[in-house]
Image (cartoon, rainbow, N blue to C red; front, top):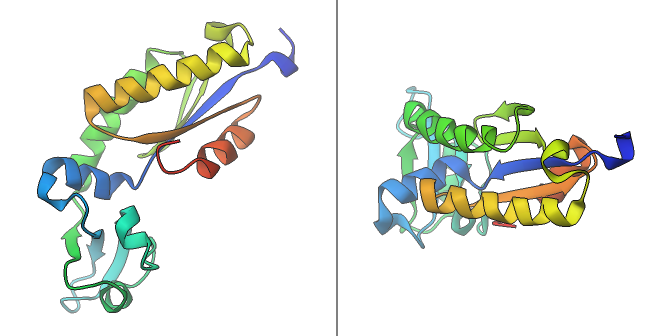
Length: 169
C-alpha cells in the first residue's frame, strides 16, 4: 500500500481538564470553568491549565496567569485546582478505546493521540470518516467526553483538521 493510501486519525479531547470537571460536577455545565495550577505563593498565583468554551469566550486561555483570568471572567466563573490523577484515568480510558482501532497508536499527550487506521479502512477515506464518527460516539457514550477528530493522509494534516473542527468536530 502506497504512502498516498495512508489514513491517520488524530483525536483531541476538547478542553479536557475542564470537561472532566464538568462530568464530575454536572452543575458546572454552562458556567465558565477554569482549571488551574496554583503556585502557592498567593491565593491567585499560578496559571490556567484548561478553560471550557464559556471561559474562552471571555478571552481566557491555557497558560494565562490566574489573576488575569479572574479579571476577565464574571463572578459566576468557577476556578478549580488541577486534579492530574483524575484526568490521567480518563485519558487512559480513551486511549484504551483508541487502541482497539489500531495497534499503531501514538499517544501525543494526556488529551491527544494519533492512530494509523490504514489497515482498518484499506485506505478508504469514506470508511475512515465513518470510523471517526463511531469512535467519537464510543468516547462520548463510554467516557462522557467530547472530542474533535481529524482524518488525513498524515498526522500533521489530521491534527490541523481536528483543530479546525473544534469543539466536538
